[in-house]
Amino acid sequence: MGECRASSSENSTKCSIRDLDIQCYLILNSTIQKTSIAVLCIAAGSLCILENCVVLCMIWRSFHLRKKPSYLFLSSLALADLLASLVFSYSFLDFHVFSKVSSQNIFLFKLSGVTASFTASLGSLLLMAFDRYISIHKPSAYKAKVTRKRAILALTVMWFITLFISYLPLMGWNCCQLQSSCSELFPLINNSYLASWIFLVVILLILIIYSYSHILWKAHKHAVYMERRQIQSERGQAKMRLDIMLAKTLALVLTVLVICWSPALILMIHSLLSSLNKRIKTAFAFCCTLCLVNSMVNPMIYAWRSRELRCKLIKGFQKIKQLLRLRGNDPEKEKAQKTPGLDTIDEETVCDTEISI
Image (cartoon, rainbow, N blue to C red; front, side, top):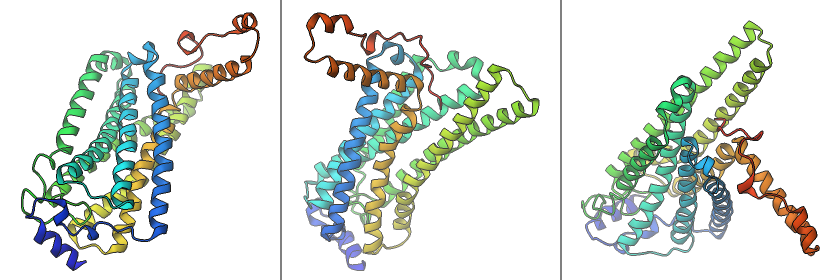
């Protein structure tokens, strides 16, 4: 690896990705490795696209959901994960599997797009964590503090900051413009920028974990209080069941978040401190796909835990099933048996309109 590092440092003054020793970054040489990565990216990416498209469609087809701040944050998360699955899968396969080398600006544009989508996903998770934190910490003032206008403002600021930070390499903060050594993991990326981005991601993760840990603590405290007081009322039992479900959901959220992001972050930090051999770089390539898996799992955890979205999805499947059964029937009979669509379902039914996390 010493030759790779020296080559990258020596050629960093030449402003072209083609002047770098690309073989130092193309670490998937065997057919088995390339096939495994391709299958994983295509499978996880396709499922991620499908899931997040369904979530976005269900939310934006319902005015009742669009006006709720919690669902605006969920829409932002779904959009970020959708972009992550599209941009990451294409860019990763194009470079590591097909070994296609673009011009400097195009390469940095695609890499910044990957950075922006994953960073926006974490930013959306943080806003959702704060939303749930306020709802638990100050439930009586929640509706006054978390309004739709403030939610849109928070999302706008978050996306603007994310895009600005992510596209800094394209705007000049790269090893080519600064004539410095490049990162061993990312071509043209300056180590100081990589360190700054890692610091930002770690701060976001700490804030998310702190917020959800506090919610878990509040849920546990309430459950213990209910048990000690032996409150047997119907409302008390329902609240205890909700707290238990909340605790299980948040425990799953934190577990998935840590498992998916820790390996890649640890290897990035390691690359800043010492040289990497090819085996570690190959491991990093597979660890990066875990971030894509996180974007795939997010809709399952956040969206499907919403009782109303689950209800809408079930009713949608029932509608499709009924339409398939009615195909070929007499038009008058079909008209008589026709049931209301998703948009005409009563919003005040058993479907709870609050996200349960």
